[in-house]
Length: 256
Length: 224
Image (cartoon, rainbow over all chains, first blue to last red):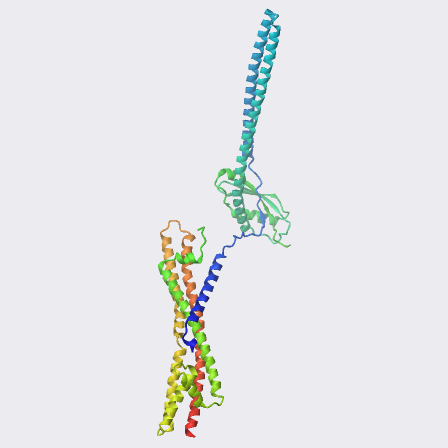
C-alpha cells in the first residue's frame, strides 16, 4: 500500500540511474583520446632516392675550396708583409750597428746589447705573427664549421620533406602496379625514373632487370601509368632528389 | 580545435533550441524512470498481495471473518482485497434487507465488484500512458533538436570563406547528442510500457477470475 503512493524511492533510483549513465558516457568520451595510430601499409616496393645532384654538390665544394684558399692567401700575404717589415727593421739595426762599430770600438758592448735587444724584439713579432696565423686558421675553420652545420640543417629538413614526397610517389606507383602472375618472391627490378620539374615522367629505364620480362614490363608500366608525380615546388629540392631517382620493385607480399 | 570536445562542453555550447530540447528530454527521461521504478514496485506489490489474499481466501477461513479484518483499514485496500471487500459489503447489506430476491442481490453484488475492479484497473494503469507517450515522442523531439542543430551549423558554414569539416563537426556532434538523448529516454520507456501493460493484463485476468469465483460462492450461499 505504501509502495503504491510513495515516489521518493523511485525518484532516488531514477537519479542514481541517470548519474551512473552520465558518468559512464562522460568517461567514455574522455577516454576517446587514443594515440594516433600509424597505418603501416604493406611494403611492396621501395623507392630509394639514389642520386644527389652531383652538380650542386660540386659547386658547393668548389665554393668551400675557394673560400679556404682566399683566407689562406690572405694569411700568407699578411705574414709576408710582417716578415718584410721585420727584415727591414733588422737590416736597419744591423746597418746602424755596423756604422757604430766602425766609428767607435768602445761602443762594441753597447752595440752588442743593442743587437741583444733587437733579438727579443724580433722573436716577439714572430710570435705575434704565429698567433695571427693561428687566429686566421681558427676563424677559417669556424666559418667552415658553421657553413657545414647550416648545410646539414637544411639537408635534414630537406630530407624530411623529401621523404613525404617519396612515400607519395611510392603509393602512386603501388596503386598502378599490377604484378604479373609469374612474379615470385625474391625478384627485384631496379628502375631509373627521369622527371621534369612539373613532375611528369619523361623517361624510365630498367637499370637492373629482375630476369623476368613480364615483371620488368609491369614495373615500367606502373611508372608510366602514373605519368605524373607530385614533386616539391622548390627547384633546389627537386634537383637534389627528384630529377632522377631509382625505384626498386619487389613483390614482398607474395608467398611463392 | 586543440581543445578536446567533452560531452559537457558540447552541451553547454549548443544553441538555445538544442539546449531546450535536451532539457525536455532529460526531464522526460527522469520522469519516465521515476514511473518505471514506481510502477515496478507497485505492480509487484499488488501481485504479491493478491496472491497472499487468494491463499487466505481459499484456506477455508470464514469469509465474514476475513471481511471484518479488512474492514479495519477500509480506505487503503487495494487489488483483490478491495474487490472482495466491496462485493461482500454489498452482499451483507442486501441480505439484511430480507425482502430482496436472489437475482437482484447477485446483480448488485456483481455490479459493485465491477466498479471496484475498474477502479483497480485505473490504478494499475496509472502512468502507463505517460510511458507510452515518452516512448513514442521523445525520439521525435530529439530528432527535432538534431535537425535544428545541423541546420544552424550548416548555416554558419555558408558564411565562412574557407569551408572545412571542423567548422560543422562540433555543431553536428552537439546536435546528435539530442537524438542520442531522445533514444535514451525512449527505449526504456517503450520496454517498460510493454512489460507493464502485459503485467496489468495478467493481474486483471486474475481479478476477473476471482470475481467470477467469488460471485459463484455468493450465489451458492443465497440459493442454499
